[in-house]
Length: 189
Image (cartoon, rainbow, N blue to C red):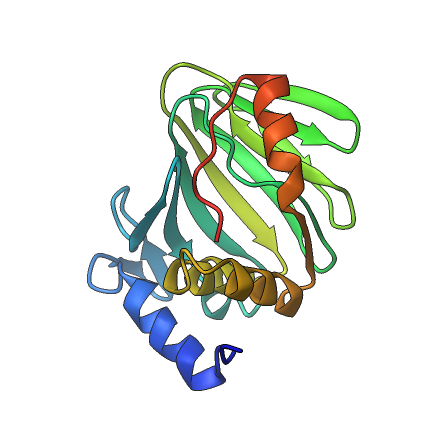
């Protein structure tokens, strides 16, 4: 059995995927401007993760990640958060989402709310790149993405990470989701 990530390990992962520290520019007393390309980027198949704002920057209230998605890419299997709400803002492209039993599509300037304890998933519903800003409240879930990036390709460790973050995941949902919505997926664990 593989060991789980220790707190020191999480600090190492944070440092590796922090990025942006030198790219952030002071905008005034206590204010920080974060540039478009700031923050470390990790690509998992059709989903990118660019860390923008960590919980430490917000007193734990929220975190922000930027997700660029390849055309027709499913971002994740059907899943349910027990600790976080997610708010997705569409920068460009078309975002599709399954929220419980409801399917929604959103374009640039739109928000999609994914409340905790609701089964959901999301994808790029278009033929061009889709980019979203994901606000996650409370903060801390940005480290889930760091741990998954560090363990990429190890399904057993991926499921352990999901459990640690109180995230229910249904990997078996991927084939049906891809068929139903005409998507591709190649970035699990």
